[in-house]
Length: 223
Image 1 (cartoon, rainbow, N blue to C red):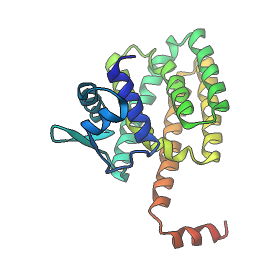
Image 2 (cartoon, rainbow, N blue to C red):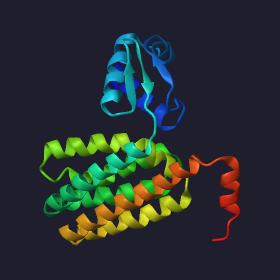
Image 3 (spheres, rainbow, N blue to C red):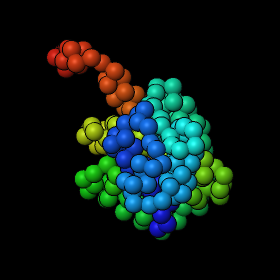
């Protein structure tokens, strides 16, 4: 792994885990000291993360961690909802036994994951086994970019155990449809899966906007 790749990975994880919260200013000199590298790989890493939408470049010497917003979330899922189901439908006829076996392994890793980073990596690989068979390289690049930008939001809703359980059921439904070579069902299940994820993340964001008193009242309210 190159110095740039290592800085990108460590910075991305720090942003995902909220170690660097939205609005945090990141300077090249501080990051170079933190990661034990020169400013050059830090500068390149910040440019790469800016392309992913995780930071906003600020001047020549640093960046600011991008904020989380409902509008940003909406746009990301609108785009994903247009591209990913279509890519899935195109890909299904080309998904072979090797990809299906890897998808089963991804499900196992997600079920056994005891940290969000492991879960996110297995989740990305699970869906990628399908998308990469679509034969649309630009589409695949777009999907990967959108997923990386959405991971900050997904990290939030992974705090909820019921969200992970529900997602596991949906993943199994997608895999079952892939194994049946049912392209239309895979497209439908992928779209439904994205809608569910969007709604759960939206709920988490809205709850974070509540004051402590409002949260207490919400918890005390009868179902």
